[in-house]
Image (cartoon, rainbow, N blue to C red; front, side, top):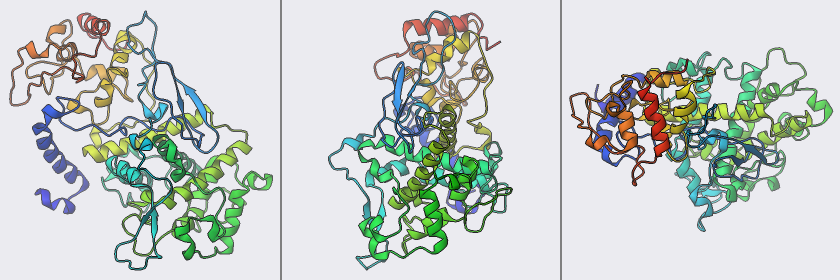
Length: 522
């Protein structure tokens, strides 16, 4: 199949052809790779391993990852502080340790983007004139250019499409709109499908809060761009100046639904929605859809009409009704922020808090789902290369699990950043949402892709284990011999530019594990 015929091919064929091209390019650039010795660029500029810190806050304030705790921001309520502990070196004195990578933005949040402190970055919307439009009064609004660039660099637009598309795989739409054939990834298809269950309504709320929250963490000084309407807009004065000349009054059904949203904490409105999922269904789904078993539900269609309200004629570039790029639009975040505000007001009225662990866990789960979509997009992954990022892991113990694995996940070493379970560089998996048993199975007596004749781990023989020699900085003197199936890339890993980052104590632990037989969890 010719590469220039990709648009006629199946999603699977397109992935394979793109991967052949990507492999050729990557091999030419291996010596420059930040994760040296890899066959795929795994740098997602912060979007690779998880996403949105804790729930609840509109402040957007984020504490950087640290050895003990980190302050994280959340969704629509007040700020909350989450704590996390971990054994950074993995060389402590016995006992189990927390394997959570302290740089996991799904748990600890994003650090502020460098542009957030730039004197050139602006607040509010950026003007956008749809192509072919000669009327200076018809101006659309996008988020600021720095945010747009980050979104495109990290494939957020397409990941947003895939999140919605995978929830139509078992229905009449069959994943329509997907750019990667997402329905081929059967392990990722959720049981709750689009506007079929209250579970889907809840996931809709959580997923969009994750995105709002992540953007506020990245741009805490400019978080107004991602802050929703404080109330349902009922007049031109409630919207940005660019939209006032186009104001049209709502019909009675939409106006009444907006009033219920603003007054969701009144007893009569709380009674309409027995749980968050039912509320999410009502807020999300299109005109005329009905939730089976729900009674006394108001008119359904708010999400639909809010999108339609801010659709500029001719704007197919960043239009709020263009599903391929609508998150570019400033008004997307105004309307979804209002939906998030309604949800948070409901939660508080029901006695729930932004700090509830269930909400934190659910936000992290949606974050990891989005990150998995990002990896599929950026790395052209096939279905058999992708695990469900939220599948429960077994409870494990043993020397590798308690002593060795934490070495790969520290902020100092960050091995699991490049070698996570989805799209792992050089097909080497050292961390992420995967059991320790599977990590060991992928290491012991397995050939190295960049170590010539060497295997990754040879039980009882650290000096002939490529993983150990790369971490110790002794791969250059190992006598690596290239072959038709393996190259020799002998630089120290991780590539710090200043020699090994793995400490002598950590190396001793790794060496001991290999010397004692490289056993996995019992």
